[in-house]
Each structure stands twice: as C-alpha cells, then as structure tokens.
Length: 399
Ligand SMILES: Cc1cc2nc3c(=O)[nH]c(=O)nc-3n(C[C@H](O)[C@H](O)[C@H](O)COP(=O)(O)O)c2cc1C
Image (cartoon, rainbow, N blue to C red; front, side, top):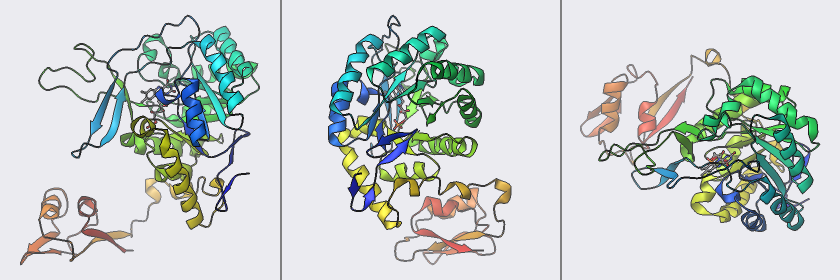
C-alpha cells in the first residue's frame, strides 16, 4: 500500500487495484504505448487506450479537427473535436498492450474498443484484448461524431436495447471487468446506465464529449473547425462541460449500483474531488492533459492528498458519494431559507453593475446613494444574481 503522508490514494475499481484515482481518458494522450508508459512513469494510476477499431475498419482523420473556446483572457475553457477513434487497428494495438503491461504491471490499463454491429467482431476483439493483458475493457458507446453516422458510438449509447445487448455479448466471452462509457447526449442517462447494468457491465464511465457546434466564422460563414470550408457537429470537452459531467455522474450514481469512472472538465484535484463526492470511484482526464501535459498528475495527487487530510480522511473512498444525499428534488428544498447580499464596503466601488442587473433582471433592491451601494431588504427576494455577478457581494444567510 502506498501511503502519502498517512493518506492512502490506492483504491479498488471493479475488483482491480489502482495506485491512485487518476486515469488518462481514452484520447490523444493515450494514442500509443510509448505515451502511456511515459504517463505511468510520471505517476498516473491508470490509462484507457484511445478507442481501438477492428482490423479492416478504415479510420481517416481530418485536419484541422480541434477548435478551442476561449474566455476574454484567452484561457481555453472548452475544446471541440471532430477526431475519430484510433487510426491504429486491433492487431497493431495488441503488442503495445503487452508491452505496457510488462513495463507497468501495477498500473491499470483499460482497453477501449468499438466494433461494427456484429456479435462475432465485438467478441473477437474483447477476447484478443483480454489475452494481450488488458486489465479491463471500456466499450465506447458514446463518441458523438463520425462514428454515429455508421450506427456506432453514441448511436449505440442512445439506444437502451443495443447498449444492453452489446454489453452482454462482450460479457459472455471475457472474465476481466467490462466498463461501459456512456454519452451525455441522451434524455436520461440513468436509463442507459441501467441498460448497461442489465447487460452485465461491471462498471460505468461518463461522460464522453457533449455534442456541439463551437462557432461560425463571421467573415466566411464557415462552421468551426473548418475543414476546407466545411465542418460537422463535434464533441465538446474541457472545463465548460464539467457541470454536465457532474450532473450525469450524480444521476448515474442515484440510479445504478455499479462503480463509476467520472470525467468531463477536470482540470485540477478540486473537480476530481467533486466527481468523487457525487459518486465516482475514480476520475479520467483528457483535455487538461492535452493543454498542460502529463506533469499535472503531481499537483493532482498532492492536492487531493491535502484535501483528504483536511477533511480527516485517509482514503479516497471516504469521500465517495458524500454529496449525494444532499441532492434532493426541487420540491424538497426549504422555502424559508433566504440569502441577502452582504456588501463588502472595503472593495465595493459602487460601479453600479449590480444595480442595473437587479433593476433589469431582479427585484430592483440595490441602489446607489451618495456614491455608496445600499440594499432594500423589503424589495430583495434573495435571487442571488448580484452575488454571482460581483465578488464584493457575499451571501448573507437568513432562514
Ligand atoms: C481529441 C479528443 C479525442 C477523443 N477520443 C476519444 C476516443 O477515442 N474514445 C473515447 O472514448 N473518448 C474520446 N474522447 C473523449 C474523452 O475520453 C473524454 O470523455 C472527454 O474529453 C471528456 O473529458 P475531458 O473534459 O477531461 O476532456 C476524446 C476527446 C478528445 C478531446
């Protein structure tokens, strides 16, 4: 057992031991053995290979296939991709999987796969990957672009019966854990989680990217990313999708008893902790690694260790699902509870932004008198718009 300052980051997932809860998600950072081995050497607990296609399925990527969403400071907060699954087919991956497991037997290596709608093909791939030494399989039922046009990816993950059926095909032939990666692009992800569970899945992973169209070039009218003047709907990842991923994982945890590998917009240990708090056993990361490299693992492990300690916990499992009982129906929320804006007189410069917001979208409860911001307690209905708008306003609780 690896103890870091009394905190033990090792954990179980579907009966497998992980050195720590941080995995690389199936994506460009897991495109080959050399990359995965470099990440393991830097301390990642596990990795999910880029999704492996069967031999004979020709995968031809386009260029460009990425387009970032930036805030006004230029920081990337979202990334659209129209990348397909691995261009390297099964037969070329098998030796790479053997190689990774030989060099890093303690790390969790999950093989992600996708096949045609054909039982023999799914089963043949699953058995080959198991024989090559993969610790578990992740069934990609969730890629939202390119593959659904062929009836694969999220076309499977949007159909409860196909999700159940293909999971059961794979379960029939392998003894290693089978994890189903779910799509957020569905009306009720809980129903898909149950379908995978019915098919015999040992675990679930969520979310894959969120179907999107990131923007249009206002000069050329070309949707982005433009491939010689044309584009297609893609998948959004990165910080912008965290609220969607967190909701999906919470919903899955409320519906299914299967262990969950959570992902979507994790850029630091804080988002990782949030995913664990709503029921994930561990987390996967893609976009942040694409932007900042494998080296982020050090800060992730240190930050989570410090946080666990501060909470008096010594294992990641102590955190798991602790926030779930606090997620209730809207009807159950306390109608007598209110927050008011507490004005920080040190920092408020009475710029009036909150006054305009409250006047035009709230209850007209903020006023500027003698160059000072004041609030009208009778008028304020506690919506919290102003508190969200300006850091000089803090929530003052009243119940
Ligand atoms: C460029 C790119 C390629 C991806 N390729 C795959 C893939 O082959 N298989 C898969 O299951 N998910 C794939 N994903 C989705 C990621 O594994 C992950 O589910 C998603 O990006 C959300 O996590 P993030 O916000 O940390 O990036 C890809 C994502 C990106 C950005």
